[in-house]
Image 1: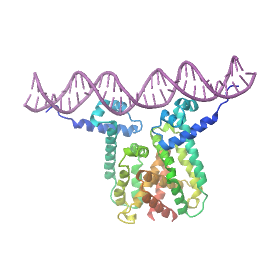
Image 2: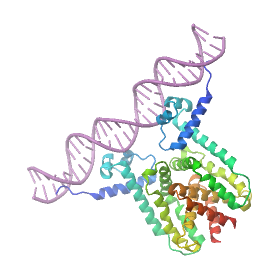
Image 3: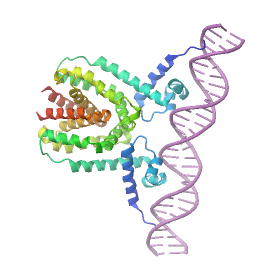
Image 4: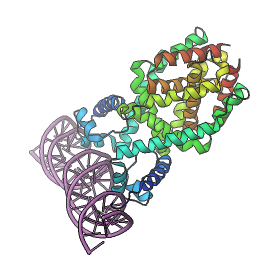
Length: 186
Length: 186
DNA sequence: GAGTATATGGTACGACTGTTTCAACAACGA
DNA sequence: TCGTTGTTGAAACAGTCGTACCATATACTC
């Protein structure tokens, strides 16, 4: 009895809040501007999420969920040469459409270095890639549970993303990835 | 005439403030706690630096200065094999003593992605490494002004640092660097 | 209608923020 | 001693932050 709950409201708010965080970043996030942009109120944000910390956690989970879906859609199984696969991963991750996601990625990592207690699953997010990439680069791995190849591939991608986002020099970073692909081929 | 100025005070404060930022990070930096830790007052910090923004800029310049000195001291010219040089760079950059510096490095990069206007020389800091590393890996470069090799080497180091700081898995990251060294050797 | 649970708005609290203002003190030359 | 310049403390200002409190509105069952 009583008024029926409306769980869709929270979901709708979460989706729009995730858009907002992807657009504006995590660092300066504040309830009042966020609420204003979402046509709601700080009161309702706390009503739905309990606290800012829980809201942020929900937003990050949602962002990661979106990213995982896109990755699953995009990464095909082992087809083509090593270079083609590597170039595909790089082209997709470094595309302009991924920029907000990449930015949030770096932001969370940096904040996690200062406040590790807030991100209990930070390591998990990194190592999760290994299952995906381990399968993709099985033919250049030293074994079925080779973690070294995925580690190196992801390090190159992340390191070049770091460079690209800081310098904007796409030509140089693209060529560096090609060089890595050549090295890996041998 | 009048009381003589004491420029040493500002220098002393800057040095200790840099220690503090390296220890506590940039994100939550606040004048009152900083002043308390430095046995001074917010009043004096603004007196010496004009504003918080200028103080931060001075601290970052000082941190970069310290880093540059250490790098210059540590990186010898081209001696030993490619693997030895690469392993030396990695061992030095991933050492525990460098952790505060690395953390600040990632923090500045992340903040620069959200507020590029505050870091006009962000790209510069990246490309500065090329002169240093270009010289160190001259024998595997395709030419005297090859920027691709330094870009790739730095991407691997930064990417693995990202991984190491997030997961703490030194064994796996060490092995990934070794794998890269083998690839580069060929 | 009453009863009840959910959903909101408005407002204020206490703790912070960077910065300013006003006053006083300290060290020098004349 | 006096004027001058550099230094410093205390307090306040105007703003923002997350959050709690209180009232009210809404939508349902009985």
